[in-house]
Image 1: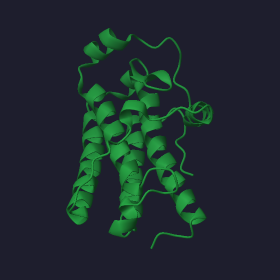
Image 2: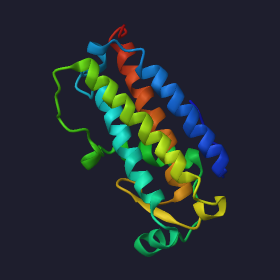
Image 3: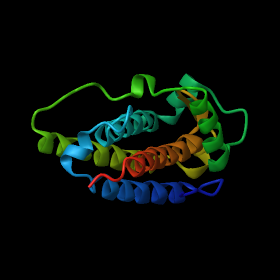
Image 4: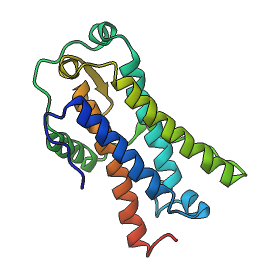
Length: 189
């Protein structure tokens, strides 16, 4: 499992997000198209996981694109230091164990007939969302990552640094979850 040392610098977060995107794209591309769209047990298909991740990343990017003054006005200033990557992971795992779900960030039940074209579109949206996140991050000085916060639907208000650490972990969490389900089913190729 990939980890990010705390406090993670903006440059380190950017590099981690780039590496995670590269690893994710490589992993999602290992699936044959039919397997990419096939549900895993009672859970989401790999395609639905990717769509969920793109939707989540776009929400973080939207926050990062706002002027910092607006972020402060809307969500206030943090009253505590940023948690570490490991602390965020543990807190998220506890919330998931209690039955939390993706809520409004769940992928829609959309269906397409041309699966190859749809797969291409999903992966393009995923890579675009990740690229736009990293571009938006360049507007934030490192010190501002701990001085501003944003709401997370399950974890409450997170500093921007925490939100970026969570975003990195979230992608790994979904990829690892799919890997476990695929292994339990005997593979996907």
